[in-house]
Length: 400
Image 1 (cartoon, helix red, strand yellow):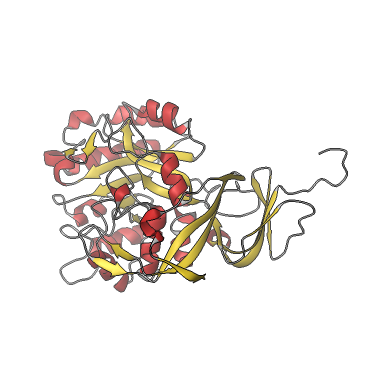
Image 2 (cartoon, helix red, strand yellow; image 1 turned 120 degrees about the horizontal axis):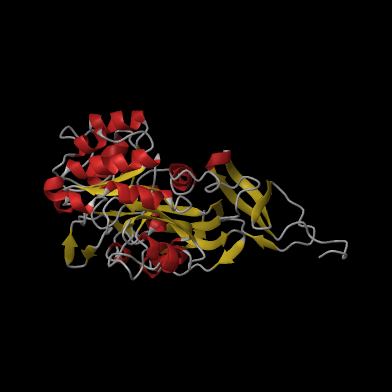
């Protein structure tokens, strides 16, 4: 306060955690100071000068986690879950909705969900006018089966009016979702994404069309979501190697996203891809009304799953913070550089004998699990919640 002569220059210091900030090539014990909702300093030791200090030694201090594939148009679409519930449980600061809303119902998403939530929520706008309208526990009606449901000009208009929150175009391709329209839906979605100069996120389901045909059409910066889906129509060929079309797409700059969900993570695919040197670019949950009950649960659970598949902690943090921020063209987020919004996720890595399961029932016993400690959103401490589905498996001896 003015006049007191010794006002602390910081609002809070997180002391002694392992700071993992891939954007700024930082991985090691450091203090992080917050002032005015932003990162004010990162250094091995910061003099508190009277500011409050929180000791986070032994914990991981990461950029606020970003789940780039969620469904959070809560209560207005049958597949969506409560964004606050999911952010608290998975220690996220930013949620990106993957096409729950289309041009026909996006305004409600913006006014009744995004604006009411303290969390950062962005959206890929579905090229289908009604968005994902027929998805629930025993209901599955494709939203991209009829050309008349995909009016490109309406998608473009809605994006132009809402560039603050809409980060790209979403289309679901394959099986009953596109029906006879098939690749026609992908062509229309690409037309919309090209018109607004934003990335396209393409969901891949069962054939037709084939995995190769879909990735062949994607442009640099586009996202193929469900990259480790199980057979049929996976990224792995009959020879057990990653499809040539998938490798060519990566070389072009197409991004590959996990998006676990209820149908899109198979251990057989994941292990074959990793063995062949093909890591994901992005880790996301595809959390929705069914997946939230397991085996996908949420982003933090899927990060733990990939950690146990052999990815490093640094990679898993990178794929869940820095890289998704860049993929949605929000370079202000996803890092802990001075001046960035103070979006911070604090985690513990525990020994754990948790038995993970993929979407077809294959199981793998893990050795480690990530658990939330604290979340700061623009410098404000947010609530984190318990993870009852993992707690029985926590090693109570020590954390790394």
